[in-house]
Image (cartoon, rainbow, N blue to C red; front, top):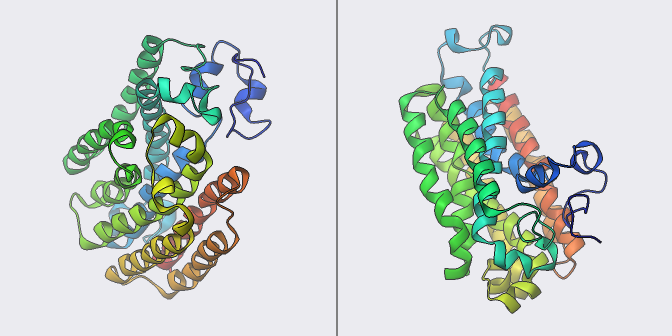
Length: 319
């Protein structure tokens, strides 16, 4: 496979819209921002949407979207704003991450065809793209209240630290969990102008979720990572990964349930969480940590899991 803009990156789906439809000059930038691999921004977005849905019952009727009729529906305007913010900030974070990791990525089979290590764009071009995406994300952030803005700015410290963690510790997934679930605090703060135990517990539950799915993801690269000296929980946990997944996912379920209980959520929420538990159980039982293809498939399935949690919280808030 040629090292050019038309080459499909290893963990992108065949026939994705970037490879099929994007103009050639844009492909390297879209691939830098992972637009050919949207699972990343969905995993960043779901905790934001969970929090918006969780906070819907806490608001005066006048805030809620007119079509919702004051019945606890998550505000669709906020859902859209968080969508664009997550897409932009995920792209900015990926540009920064790839600039920091460009030498490592070139030595790992799965990442060697990314635009920076393959020479399709320069670090300067990547930095300019990252700045543009960050400005879009900041424009979304500027529409929020002061508490949410301060939280959003604070998250940049975590984002800046993350790419360096794999060189320092076997637990970079902990820092990724902090970054990817910050939206669980943001959604509540945007709606209420404050924090509450419920979004904090939801945030912790999201971190446990990330520890699970990103450890699974890291198993794809464990052989190359050992060769280049990169650390991860996949390497640290090794053959004990499955029982640890049970712990991580059980903690996530318990935390989400506790967050719902703290806002006195409706019974449909608990019924919906049975589907969430079943999806988690399937991941743990069926996974083959020595198959990169299976690990990628299980990782991607967490998009469905995030949707199931959102639907559980939303239906529990509405009814």
